[in-house]
Image (cartoon, rainbow, N blue to C red):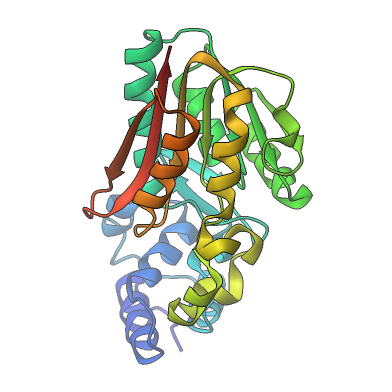
Length: 287
């Protein structure tokens, strides 16, 4: 069908096909970029190139697979995060742009609390793909970074990313703070499961049918892990320390109150994301 057609014409077909199936037409461009191992501007320069038969068949297969609801990132096997390419599969959540704001906010506060590139012990609890832990290690190379997860298969994916991105991370299997007990930490970060089970009915089928539910949902209206973290962390942090957690946009006050109870002298902040929604709670301790 597409013999001697151009990339431009193939994209037009794919965009129309995806719109008809109720999917985002921009996925077509992302799939084509992956196929040609190029970025947006590189693809634009090749729009009038002929697409060969092998690439056309692969592109058609990928587009049809996305039309069924499978996320583009699981089809291509990669996602960009903080300027780096991470391997992703169904064992881990796809890294979100909002989580990049946790990285930015953490770096700013670390500089103020500890000075630039101080030697620090940093833990990422519930690391998933390793996006937070690996990015922090690359951005703050003097840090000793530990990453934990309750999922063995998620840790395997994170280890692949650490190897690919040349990041020296100590990966540990276990639930919440259990793998980092009996040590004192300067920085603890976490993007835990925080969606209430009753919210599932409002969620996209693309997320529900493909991303790991153990990394999405939590009890107590999505708050149980924040409550447990706030209860457990006072015994694990140094006298000067930083805690940062990503939250659901309705959870700011509840999560902040957990940390206020555990760290009455701490500086607690609820930080909004680029969309002006509550997204991060920071707790700075300096006693």
